[in-house]
Length: 257
Image 1 (cartoon, rainbow, N blue to C red):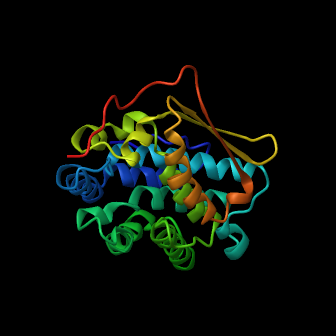
Image 2 (cartoon, helix red, strand yellow):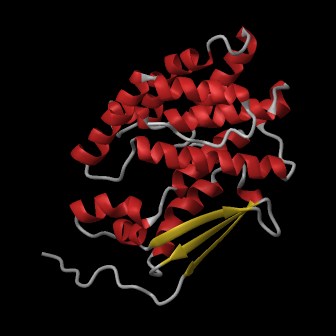
C-alpha cells in the first residue's frame, strides 16, 4: 500500500516514501498490528489504512504550522531544513503503531524497538552520519510520545500525537462498534461524521468536526482534547465541534443483563 502523501517538491521525502512503500518488513508489521488490534482485541484499525490517514493528517498539520511561521524542532535545535521535519513526521507516523505486532500493552515502547532498524534503512545514504542520527532520535521521540501521558517536546512529535487522535470519522469506528457491546467510546466515535483541517482565523490551525449526534463530544473531549493539551501545539490550534443537520440516533436500546 502506498501512503500517497503530497510531496510538494520534497525530494528527500520522496525517496523515503519509496522505501516505505517497498518495505516488506513494515507491511508485515502493519498486517500483524491489525491482527492484534482487530482480530484479537476487537478494537479499531491500527494497520495500513490508519497509517495512511494519520500520516496525511500529520503532514498537513506540520505544513499549516510552518506556513504560519512556527519553526519545527529539527530546524530550531539542529539547524536542519523544514523538509527534514517532514521526513521525521512521515517516518514517525508510518512506524508509530508497529509495536502492536507484539502487544497492545506498552505498544509505544515496543514500536520504538521495532522501528529503530527500519529508520536506519529508510535514511541510509540520504544523510550524513550526524544528520541521520539526529533524525533517528527525533523520529523515535515522536513514536514514543504519541502515548497519551507522555509529553512530546517537539512540534514534529506533537503533530504525530494529535494526528493519531484525528483518525476518528465514523467509518473508522464501525469495527469496534459492530463487534463489541455499545459503550460511550464506540457510540461517541460513531457520532463523528467528518473532520476538516484548515488554516484558522485566529490560530494557525482550525479543526472543525461535524457530528451526527452530540455523543461525539465525548470522543472530542476524552481523546482529542487530552492529546492536544499534552502537546506543544495546543496554542496554535482551535477546535470546533457541532452537530450538522438533524441529530441522528445511534443506539436504539441499551440494557444491562
